[in-house]
Image (cartoon, rainbow, N blue to C red; front, side, top):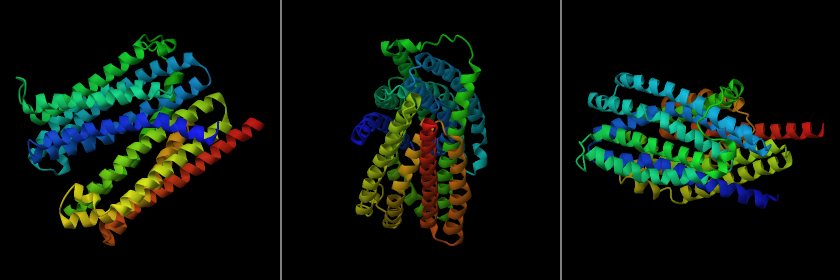
Length: 447
């Protein structure tokens, strides 16, 4: 294949994934808009719970992500029977892991009172978090089926389901938060039940699609477990656990950076939230490219076609750099305008406009490191990236952010410079690791 064909194939896979991720982000946006109408304390409680919950949830998401490279490799090698084994054992593994996470979140809800938040916020948050804990199980079931079919190069179903889920969630919020259609007014708890219902819907919809679709019948995607395959479960855990930890280190670093900026001042935290929200939108697009890279690299690894694997890798990185450089130019050109879409406070918008310059700079490296991770996952190389993420963000980024932002009083600029450095280090290592792996593949092939 030519590089032009590789770019076209990657984009074709990436677009539905990116739209699906944006659809999932919109669930949170809609929740915030609808919860905000009943009061600031409810919105604060929602923000507190979702920040804590997401940190825990990424561990489960990491476990499900293991399905994609394993399925892509098995499919590339023509081993359709193994694809079915991966799905069934993945479901078993991820449901057990989901139950453990759900129990942990349920009891962590009682510990929110130690986070020095207002009493009324903690009371609302604790009940809301306990309801959401049950939603972890259907969400990870959805993720398992999703990652399985994405490993088979089918990225559209998750996109459609996530889009429909927004309407299910909004309707559930309208009924349960405000007490419409004769239902009791449950306020924040109503949003929790709506989210739980939505996640049950997406799990059932995805499972039904995979089980009933003729195109997956040869993989025997039913829930009829023939046996427990400990060897396959070990493979899933060996990829999934480091992937989850890598996500935890990255998400945790950015969450802690927000806390650190909160120490500096309210205006700085508001400006940080504006800049990170804009950067998060572009990151959803990169996640689609990274997922497409995992699928295509895994597929070529299964075929043992290392020349095309190299092209798939290079083309994915090229797309990521072009996309993020384009967004970087937009951030620089509109750095004074974009913050005014969120707030009219001149002090906050001025701080945010500077942070967008940092965002424009780190866009390229953020895109490179995220896509690099996707490529490495396709190669099932996940342990070294996990260690690198810990070093880049927690040994270099966060301590430097505290030193520059708090000690030397560079404030939010110092924190963002440090986070950018962490992303640069991660991007450099991941691209080096990719090149090293491909070189080894090609050497082993000619040996």
